[in-house]
Image (cartoon, rainbow over all chains, first blue to last red):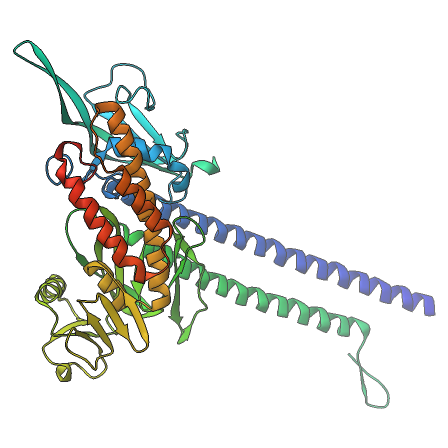
Length: 186
Length: 322
């Protein structure tokens, strides 16, 4: 008699335990789903803010002191990149890795059209090159771009009365500044 | 539940078990909901802070001098600005806290920016904020300094010099939508009672006194040294601790920019044979900047930058900046 009662009680406890486990599992699954959705929405808004930042950065970076021509090339120019300065920046870029919040900054010549293959600028081939990668050499991540003038000092060899003279002149070309973000996650 | 023969209530094990388990489940659920709501408010705070930082992008000037915009936030907001100089360029952090159902949320996530220099009361509180910026030049542009003021904080400028008066008039004119917080008065007594009074040169007795000859802002027992109008506004709107930290960051950026110009000079010399003849002065300047301690050292650096600027202008063909 006692054993029968004990068995019944044990059965009830087992039922209860299963029920509790089921309820806990249900809440856990629901919680996980809510958490995943929330995390996803946070990631989406973070991506949106990053994209917005990159877009605004692309349009203003040419005017930041590390890139800007200032008044150096014949009066005040906005959206003008001093390429000589960028080449100097390239050799110091390690310090600037997080500075602008972009995973990469890229400068490309657009016009006059570069007829040879894409050529990275180095102190040896400059200015006979078509692009400068700052921060990382990769082109991963989404990019936002803006058109800019790319200006530099150049030697112009002129002939007067059969004699050759070297003159330092300002030379400007059309280019693009591309700001990439989110490259490291790929 | 069972009533025994004597009338007392007896709980079966199943009942006790159900009550205990139910209580645990309920308390876990309540804890989860509270945590979730806190996470939600932290998310809003972090989004607002990052949003403010992103919104500051267009404020960085090209060649215009100063711009002022009104930032409107739908709820009462506290903007906490932090400054740290633990790395080369240091960090500007923005944190926000918003008033939700009558209570201030705890400070949200610290959003860092490495290329921003914000000067404001800490925290600055309100729904509407005026933001304006001015470039710092040493002698080339180093950065845009951003000033955030709440429309709740009124700043009364007492008899400022003409150039400051003109600039403030332009700022006021550009943004006279509502709640103007910059006031120009000839006499201190005309300032609104709750306003922060800023006196210039001979005037005394204000909350702040700006001495344009000694180039310092005096506030109770604190002295903040400045050079140029951009830093004068910075000293007016921020605390001494934040000001000194930001100046340190700015001087580090100036040093890095001088190093870039030093490399540029070498690069141009090799490429075009054009010698800017600034190498010695630039090296001296880099050394001065390396030894920068606090805002009191600004005058030496500023004088040196003026000397460099004169020399740079003397060789128009090989100028490094202009």
